[in-house]
Structures are given as C-alpha cells and as structure tokens.
Amino acid sequence: MSRTISCIRRIAFASLAMLVFGFAVPAFAKQGARNTGPRNAQPAAPQRQQALPTGYVRPPMNPPSGLAPKMRVAELPTADSHTYRISFSTGDEILSGLTEFAEQHHIVSARVSGIGGLISAKLGWGSPTVPGMKEFDVAQKCELVSLTGLISMRGQHPYVHLHGVVAFSDGSTRGGHVIEAHVDPLAEIFVITTAAPLPPEGATGAPKR
Image (tube, rainbow, N blue to C red; front, side):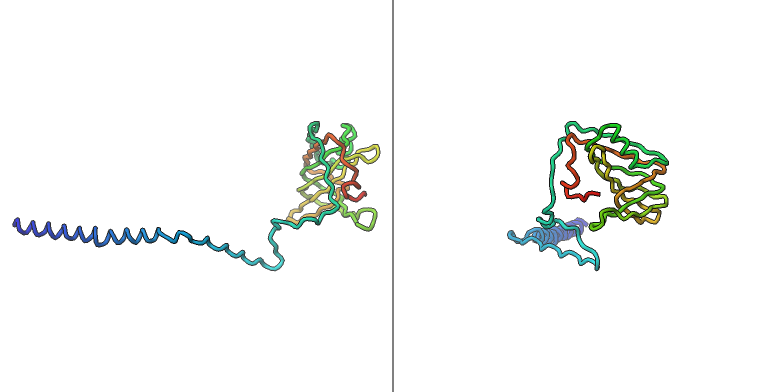
C-alpha cells in the first residue's frame, strides 16, 4: 500500500514539473517576445482622409492670407462701456424701439445682438449697383434666430443698422438688412456701448445706404 502511495506521489510531482517547466516557461517567453519590438520602430503612417461626396468640402483650417486688402481695424476702448438689456413684447417694432432708445440714452456708438419671435418683418438686400435695397416681406410667424448690428451717428441722429435671420416652421430661413421687425411674442436685445464713437460706415468698407 505504501509503495502505491509513493508511486502516485512521484507521478503527481512529475506531472506538476511538466506543467510548470514544460508549458508555463514557454508561455512567459512568448509573452516577452510579444512585448519586445524593434527599438527604432517607425510611427504609423497617417491615415488617408475619407473622400467626400460631390458638393461637400472640409472647413479650411489655414485660409490663404492677403484676400482682404480693404480690411480696416480700429481698437475701441471699452473701460467706459455699458450694457443694456432691452425687452420687446407683442406688437413692438424693433428698429423703431432701438432708435428711440438710442436717442433717449444718447447712444453714439454700440453693438447690438438679440433673438426673439416675430409675426412679420421687412428685410432688404443691398444691391452693389442700385443705390438702395431690394425689399421682401416676411408675412408669417417666424423665429428671429439671429439679430446683429451697430448703432452709430449719422449726422445729428443715431443710426441703427441691423441684419437679421428668421427661421420658419419647416426649418428654412431668410435673412437680410432689417427694415422692419414686428415682435410676437417677445424679443430680447442686448446693446453694448463703446467708449469711442464707431468710425463712419464708409471708413470700414461698408456701403452707405
């Protein structure tokens, strides 16, 4: 009986040795080989960009310089600037209200931005050859998704120059120079004054209306 037990033990130790030294060591060696590569391996080549469908372009990351020779830059002090929040309600006309605001608060130079809802509007397109604007009506409920502009002096009176974009229920949009904008139900406009008067429109390259 003791001889049988001793024989079983020797077989068990031999099997364990085979498992440890016959299989485990080669496995470690293979793992080390996988983790060891050439020291001077070259970085992977950059992947080629996927071709775009016809009519699509990628945004320019480095636009060419020298294509705006008429650009003018004027640094305007802002230490004495003031910010006004102007709220309009149903029936108000934005251009009229902002002109009245500028007169009452003696605004001679300011930036304008805002959003809101409109029930109707008149927008214009400035012709490069005709001294005026082509007018088109917006005669339906729409969202004023963008309103930007300037307030400057034209003669002795403030001039409110606004551009706007309106969106309709189908997602389409129209935009242009704001001639009229009738609010429904509300509009929120911010006016930020500048310490120095804005230069005349002609000095910035903008056409005079």
